[in-house]
Length: 288
Ligand code: SF4
Ligand code: SF4
Image 1 (cartoon, rainbow, N blue to C red):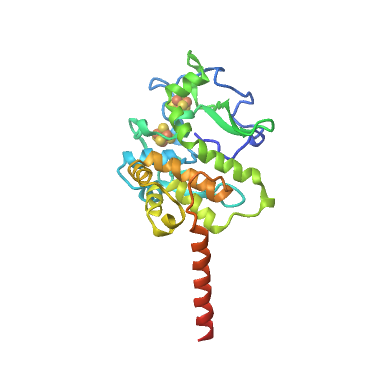
Image 2: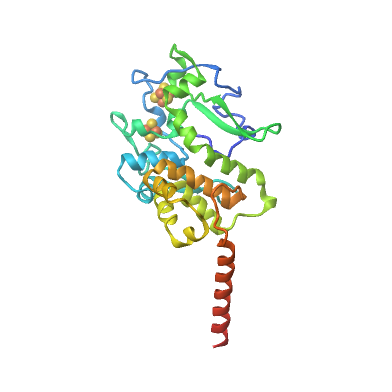
């Protein structure tokens, strides 16, 4: 089982891919049924290549009673999502195998909190920026791998019904802004220049470490710049999902200048004064 990287486009589908070259919409009918009775049960979990999304981490860290850092360290492997080294994470396999780290004798060991990719399979999805519209449109494909017998089961349903059955909607709702950020980064192309080390670090923290992001919004550095109402701050600190949504707003503001978080009026002057102070200190040291 593999999921498409969120930064792929339809043009990236390889010629001999199991991805069927027919674009599906919410009302398209598919024939598919995965259940414990199929002869291939869990075959897809024995050979995985799964990119992790921020909401996957939220669900699994909660389930496993870990903080985000611990979850990432124990269960994921970093990789570069694009030529600018945008940080991505893959779900780990069991040592020396291609088998999912969460697979047990009885099946998925984290079923109610399984990842977005596991819920989608055997559908593939992509977000595409269509030239004629400003937004991102979701398109779907059927993924037919030889080992998957679910396609032979006598059940038809629409893409929308399948998404509902698998609990995908919540995952998409939570990850949508994140995917949008990746697509925007990608569509800006190499000519805009590589993102700074600092912006890659911020992307990493906002995407995969909501617990560090919580600490970050409590630092004096953050509160000196951003004017969060006390009630808003308390709401964010108490709710991981709200915090994750806020992290994506923060990223959009920092990376693309999409202002949605109020900035203190005197923040710029304070930053300039600090920089001056630092420069003066360095000059004085140089003169010692
Ligand atoms: S998380 Fe569960 S469903 Fe997903 S690959 Fe692992 S065992 Fe299979
Ligand atoms: S039917 Fe397909 S998705 Fe279901 S267990 Fe078999 S291989 Fe996996």
